[in-house]
Amino acid sequence: MTDRFDVVVLGMGPGGEVATDRLMRAGQRVAVVERELIGGECAYWGCIPSKTLLRAPDARAEAGRAAGVSEPALDWSALRDYRDFMIRKLDDSKQVAEYAEQGATVVKAAGRLAGRTGDGLLRVETDGQTLAASHVIVATGSEAVRPPVDGLGVHSDVPVWTNREATTLREVPDRVLMLGGSAVAVELGQFLARMGSHVTLVARADRLLTREDPRVGELSRDALAADGIDLRLGSQARRITRSRSGACVDLDDGTAVGVDVIVLGTGRTPRIAGLGLETVGVDMDDSADGLPVDDHCRFGDGLWAIGDVTGQAMFTHVAKYQARVAADNILGRARTAAYDGIPRVIFSDPEIAAVGLTTAQADDRGLTTVAVEVDLPRAIARPWTYETNPRGTLGLLADQDRRVLVGAWAVAPMAGEWIHQAALAIRVGIELNILRDQVAQFPTYTEAYLTALEQLDA
Image (tube, rainbow, N blue to C red; front, side, top):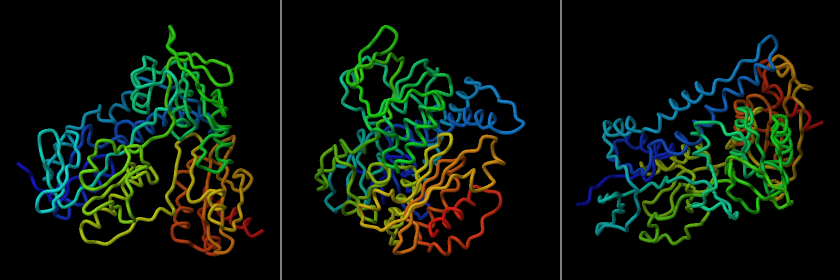
């Protein structure tokens, strides 16, 4: 028997949930297929647990920099319990029941495309069940990259954590080797160091966060070094072997590092293997950079993809945005996706936020740009009212011909909250003279935009 629906959603992370909710509110009959937990990577092993864990050591550090406040103690047991609450103890039974009550058919199993029915509907096969629908949304997410290092295989007995093990840890290890210089490496490396681990960070590149402007990587390096992290940039792990107490990591500079656990912060790859794409005429390699969606989030007749599986701006907020775009198109509300003005935030201390183009990307596009960098404690009052040893830097990049912002970054307290002014300016193309005429609340970090904007024309 084949059950028929308007839409089948393959994967119920944040993108899948947003699409499902939007479609069901419009009266669509929806089936959702999830092989693991409804809520996906973000809710259980990514954004939610990592930001929950980061908050306590960040609050302690903030208290240490605030005038008149005693530095509080960290309570790992209490923090761990709250983390478990936030990730629902890895139990999605409430979410399953809620979707069923709302009228969705919930299938907790792996699913794959299986061609079309005689009347042209897309078929999805799950564990002993066949679903058919006019539309299928693929939202299967991504998985951690495991670099080709000798001894780091899936079946190795070396203690290796991906983000999943790291964000659900029960005990804080004494010695950690963080492999990679990505956002995951920066966030988890700082968290573990502040919780008492001796952290060694090994990255092939000579700087952290290579997708951002070099200055951002430099400032993040300084922040991690201040927390006692041993940074081995421009270095590679050559061989990893099991030792009596954990693992021994041989580096290409001839040194070796003894650790209790290795944490992978080497990026993520779209999860497209085994989706049955060939059955619906989509021919691509399982190692591709993502499903090739158009600006409507469509990759075939009745086929849609959202989130990390597309390989485009792999963030939860982008998955939710693409979900709204795809759902609206399915509902006949023509809509296109645009990726200008998407903020990128790393929840370290200080926070790292960026949006738009880097200088190198602007150069590649042939833009004539001008850049400015502002030291916040020298420019505005807010850093001094916020902490006794104020920090913070803001960088702006403008297109000289069009007189608009094309890029911005900040390494400063709460930067993830106030980067959105630049994000909106870039998205809409607000002219520099209008931005300069905007009045910011005093005293706030947002005031720094005026100082930076005026220096662009100095």
